[in-house]
Image 1: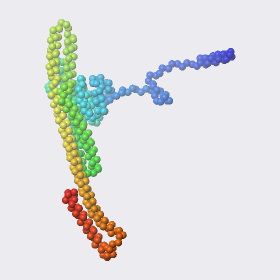
Image 2 (image 1 turned 90 degrees about the horizontal axis):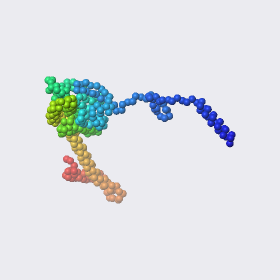
Image 3 (image 1 turned 180 degrees about the vertical axis):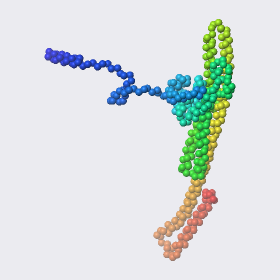
Image 4 (image 1 turned 45 degrees about the horizontal axis):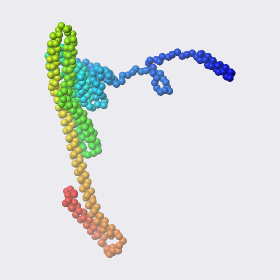
Length: 422
């Protein structure tokens, strides 16, 4: 027992000595820019790439004076900048690529018309994906028209107290947001009109070719034409329904007056600041001033329901879209008329085939009589006719004549019953 304890004590001492000889590794602090990537078997340390902003998309900013810039903003930045809820950005997403919506918010207007997806405020417009081929005409129209459509009257009213209005202000009745909306509707209506004109131009030759020759190739062309027509009609109908929805509700149209609300907020802030700066000695004066402010706000609020300018603009484009829709419906009616004509032709050919089949059936019945007589003579039954010379051809001629007579009788009966055409 003592030898065992001595050997154990020696092994523990030797292990402690070896462990003391091993140098302790210094503490390593992980580098801040390194991360483990790849599979667990690789365990490679690579430099951590720069963190990308999730959901950043390309936008173009236009102010009321025509100045523009390209920016890449993510979703949260847009929400904070435009003061709109997050659900409105989903409307501008790819899921609603061919939908049409014009939504009014407290400080912004969300416009989703076909390929134009924008957020319009009283001072600027944020345009999504401005480098798309379809959006480029809208960008060009903004650059051409916005610098010439400044609103000094509205800007002067925002400053408060400056009542001097330039002479050209009376020529600009629409606020900034309605100018943008008008340009958007004009571009969209022009685009839809162009598509309808191209479709109408190619539709009539295809339909005329089908009316002349009902072939698989012509039927495929008409099928493709009809599907394109249906999609285009749905797109025009969506824009038309959205404008009609706005025209039916004056409150929604009043909410679209962003410049009016922006001016009211600025006037309210200015009056509140002036009221707070007054001292206590001018209490009566401030009360009179507040009363005048309230009366002025009442006058302004009485004009909030004045949506005549917007209503006239929307009615003009509604009539234009209604005319575009009528063009599509006229092409669809022509397609329906062509289909009816083709169906009549096919029914006529089908009737001709039925008449031919009936005629052949009558002929088969007449020939069957002659076959019956020939089968009867073909039996090996003793008959005196077999011994007579020169009787074969007269019998064959007689049976043929009877068969022809039977065919004519049945054919005449079918025509008498109007089973066959004349």
